[in-house]
Structures are given as structure tokens and as C-alpha cells.
Image (spheres, rainbow, N blue to C red):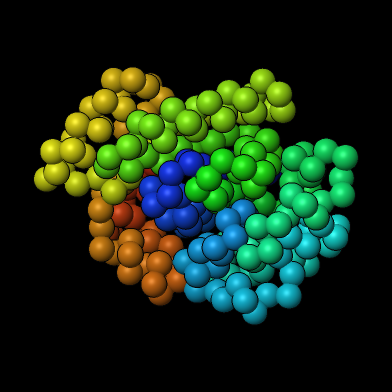
Length: 251
């Protein structure tokens, strides 16, 4: 049975998609087979993997709304052992189209028994709502990327409230793997202050690994190859490989 991890934060631009794709790349470097599920209507996961979502006939939307065969909706990427269940813009109306009695539980039912993968990583949209809730309910654990900039703590507090709600009403076993500090620049005083504050508040729940601002990460997204494969010796790739070791996900 695959291990399901959501990458979530209700603030945009914190590195959710970057973390999803980069962590997937690091995992396959540890001989794991990974499925990325894009629950964001912007389809940035496809772009980050060198794919054009507009060319796909079927997506996660069809799986959830029309009971389309999930294995037929999954797309191979150019990276061995890394597959994608893509999104499309119609995810924005997903909640109104699902006819299930328990629509929030449907994603979990569809992916829980996917035994072809070791890990399933879910990239969530940057807002509270049906898509994010469905993703958290379907997951075993959640990683919360935190950008080292203004309003980071506000976003964290909102995210924690959402997770508590999910644990109370839907998925009592959902665990926070940790807070991941992203876009860290040691030259910026604010970045240092946010880092200190997050570590003080959440201590053992904050990863030792920090993801730096790194041009190679941006370049890797433009060429559609995970940073750990595109430039394995870059500081960005080294950071995500360190994250895998810290999580002990390769056991």
C-alpha cells in the first residue's frame, strides 16, 4: 500500500509544487516508485514535469466525477518511476459535480489501494476549500512548506486549524510530518527572524533541512525535470535529498 503525503499550505507561493516535484525526484533516487497527484486547477505539476495538461483527455476530475479508470488517467513522465495524475481547470467545479454521498472521502477511496507505487504525493491548491480538504482527508501525513517571508505565521495558524478540523471529523490518523522552511536566504534578516520564530513555536515539528533560494530549482521547473535529476549537485537538490534522509522515507 502506498504511503500518501499531502503538501499543503493555504498561502500561495510558498513552494508547494516545487516541494512536491523535488521530493518526488529525491524519492525515486532512493529507488522508490512515486505518483504525483495534482489537485490544483492551475496544473503546475504537469508544467514542472515537462507536460502540457491541455493535451490530456482525462484527469483526476474524470476519476472523481465519472469513475474513470484511474490507471488510464495516470500519465507517464519522462522520468522513470515518476508518474502524474494530472489536474485540469475543471477541478474548480469539482465539488458541484461529484454525486457521491460523501464527496470529501472520494479521493481517498480512489487512491488508497493503488499498489503500484511506494509513495503518493498530493500537491494541493493554495486555499481552504473542497480540494484541499479532500487531499488532507485522503492522506496519511502532511508536509507544510513555510516561506521565510511576511505573513508566514498567519498562514501556518490557518493551516493548523484546518488540519485539526480534518483530524476531528474525517481522518484522526492524519499526522503532520513537519514544517519545511522554503526560499530561505540567510542574507535577509526577515528570513532569519521567521526561521527562529517557527523553530521556537514548533521545535521538533520543524525540519532541520531548509530549502534555499536557488536558481537551479527555477531552471529545473522550466525544463520540466526535478532538481535532484536536473542538477543533482546543486544546493537545491542537496537540500531535498537531505529532506528525504531526515524523513527516513527510504526505509
